[in-house]
Image 1: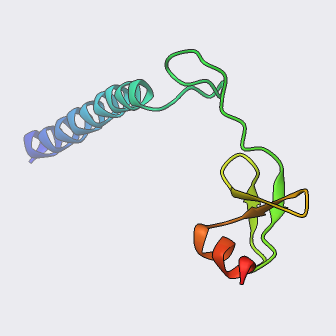
Image 2 (image 1 turned 180 degrees about the vertical axis):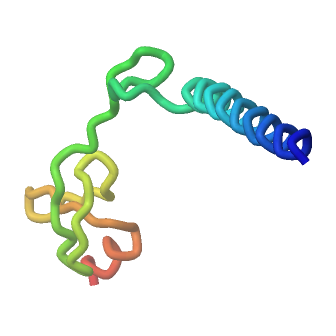
Length: 91
């Protein structure tokens, strides 16, 4: 009976030890595949800035000036979320 209890405690100890080793190795591998917390990519380049947000006059969504569809209307640049909104604005 004492031997069975000893085997159970030994099994619990070995399983706990194995789980902690797997956890440490898993965290190490995850750190290799996650991007830096510094905001730079793996090439060391500066992070890309999204730009100022402008409101689409057709649908009302806010879009980044860096990624928006731009049209010049009456000498003023208007920002759209998509080409479809740009076409609707023309009509």
